[in-house]
Amino acid sequence: MPHIIQFKCRACDGDIAIGAEPAGRATCPGCGNDQEVRVPPTLQTSGVVAICVACGHEDLYVQKDFNRNLGVAIVTAGVIASTYFFNRREPFYAMASLVITAAIDLAVYSIVGLVTVCYSCHAVYRGFDRNLKHEPFDLKKLEKYGGRTPRFGA
Ligand SMILES: [Zn+2]
Ligand SMILES: [Zn+2]
Image 1 (cartoon, rainbow, N blue to C red):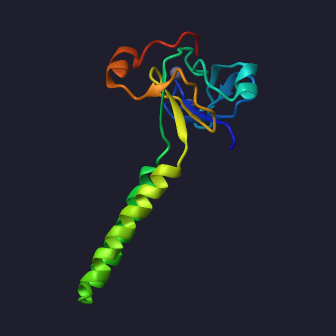
Image 2 (cartoon, protein in one colour; image 1 turned 90 degrees about the vertical axis):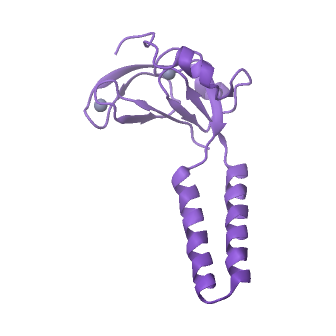
């Protein structure tokens, strides 16, 4: 899996995506702002996130990388299929469509990987191994760490 780091541009709030190659700056594709990042050489070799490259804080959490749009699409397709069969007076198939939809939804949810997310700046790290120090999302930690001032300049 390729390493992808996504974070917000401090100038325009647009998305910036970079790889795990060691870097000191990243350019925003939206507004052209050049922003400081700190991608250490160890990030690519270890494949584990220790410190957020976008803000320098080390409080991160892990969560399932479940694409909400995909989830909604699966459920919508299931409801359409179910309505179709129900209108044709085939309640068995209508029910079966919903059950299959739920099963697919669950299967997709269980096979998706984990992403690492920064509490402070919400940078998202895809394709990295889980750092065992990172726990699932905790609202208390978000209240404590969310939106903190980055440790290095723009
Ligand atoms: Zn920008
Ligand atoms: Zn961060």
